[in-house]
Image (cartoon, rainbow, N blue to C red; front, side):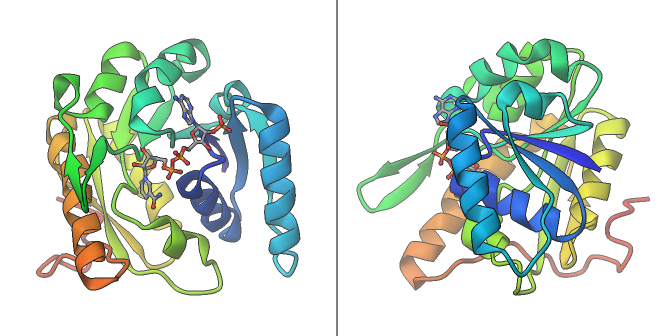
Length: 224
Ligand SMILES: NC(=O)c1ccc[n+]([C@@H]2O[C@H](COP(=O)([O-])OP(=O)(O)OC[C@H]3O[C@@H](n4cnc5c(N)ncnc54)[C@H](OP(=O)(O)O)[C@@H]3O)[C@@H](O)[C@H]2O)c1
């Protein structure tokens, strides 16, 4: 599948791009500056020369033209960036991995954006796009280390069945990640806010934790 990552040049976007490319997807790494995306993708390909990764640099517009898109900008720029891409994102699924957080002293604190979450704010400016959430809790470092296995549950929020299914399929295409449907975008506030808690765990324990749920049936990706 052809996947575009909007704001793909940061640690989170490039790590997800590497992981998705490692399982056979073609990924357009989007940026506000094509030259920046080109430099970052070139460095990735040199650093991963033992793998054959289908990574392409692009503008955010080119990323938004892909079949399925991921929003990976900082929260401050997420809504404006999404809104500027309204036309190419129409009738597509856009997965937000964005968290609204602030570092206050030695801890992270969740911020409360308009409508409770960045994902809901993005949905509000993209009424003809199927906005979902995923990947908020996966540390970029672990996501990018494609020679090492990764194991985590990935919380998926969506107002639409179409968005939920497409997101679950993408998450499930990465070995070791299990999508878990956890409600509509009304629940995205809790998912985004939990990231601050996990980051505080990482600070306290010098760790890189992800989320694991106990008690899920093996067919956890199918909620029925
Ligand atoms: N880092 C993690 O471990 C992690 C894990 C899960 C989720 N997340 C979430 O994923 C998102 C990206 O994280 P990150 O650490 O990769 O962030 P980042 O490096 O700060 O930003 C990612 C990219 O977004 C673009 N960007 C920066 N400011 C922007 C603005 N005002 N408007 C539009 N684009 C802007 C930049 O790309 P260009 O300059 O090339 O356009 C930048 O390389 C965040 O919302 C974060 O909460 C992060």
